[in-house]
Amino acid sequence: MLNAGCFLSVSFSTPHSRASPGALRTCSDTIMAVFEKSKGQDLTGWDKITHTQTIKEGKDTRMTLAGYDMTGFYVISTDTSVCTIHETTSPTVKQPVAERQFVVTGVRDGSCEIQALYSEKNRTVLASFKVIVTNVKMAAKLVFFPGERTVGECTMGTIFVVGGNGEHYDAAGGAPAAYKGEGGHTSDPTPPGVYVLGPQHKATTGTWPNSAIPWGAQLRLGKEPGRVEYLQGGNSWAAANGPTGIIVKYMKQFAARDGKTRTTEECDNELAGLFFTDRERKVLRTTSWDQNDFGQWSWNLTLNGKITPFYIHTTPLNELQTVKGWTVKLDNSHGCVHLAPKTRDKMMADGYLKKGVIFEVRKYSDVAPRN
Image (cartoon, rainbow, N blue to C red):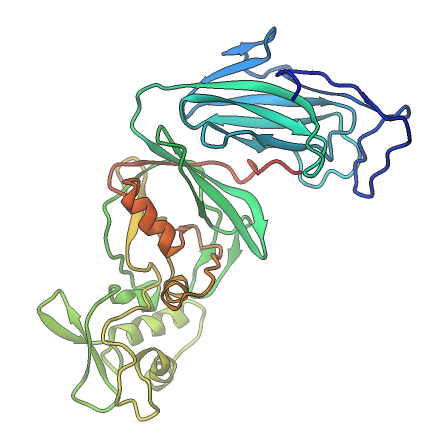
């Protein structure tokens, strides 16, 4: 391995070609690269002589990878539990580029290297610098990079625990580009900012009809055929479907926001598969409600002491996938932060999903290195 901060010139005895864009060579097959501070980048904690960057937990520093044709370099942190690196340059660059911009975030005390490798397979280190993260004795906080990478059709991110033990968790925020949905809703990117987690609770709302009933609420057959009731507040039963049903009420309002009308019969027919196992609607599919859009538990991302529209939660589909032992695939939300049920349970056990924990959301433009 090369020393931290190297500026490497690698010469090949024969022409070296690559099929991928950005073949890393000059006309004499010489590769050169270096990590350095560009004009305007903060020099705090930067030792130019030893090529060492010192930062505090939870703090950022900017760094530039400079040289000839940086497009194909494979950039990594050798220990993402100490620091993580994200790229801030354009994702659509095809021509050779002279520099790439990165942001390095301290996660926990320790040291590691940021390295630019020739490729994922060829681990030759072309440039590197050392990062030292110092502990500031802060309470652990969560930092979410929502736009890191694409998995299938989902834009995925990572939640890093700053000031913890280097833990990190997969998550999916809102769609990276806003669009209009049904029921008067819009799907928006999760707004960047510093939030504080509200208390753990079972979220309910009428703007999403299935979420009018809390997750786990007890269900029973009503007195009339095809009717279902749910236990409300632990001491009284109320209609879930039918003319006075709470879900039917909000299904009609949901449609009205799109300029549509729905009858009670249409709503009941749509709900039949969620409530019953038989066509006669005499046997309940489940005796507890498991279709609340916020999953079993949720935590609001409060801002300046006020409730926001954004929550951390699971989804009914992911809850079902977990129970069945199927592969859990996250999808982008309307602005909330989606977790897999096992991830939620792990974060709860680790003590990071609880009231008062700081939850910082970064910009979607901070992505995983474009390797």
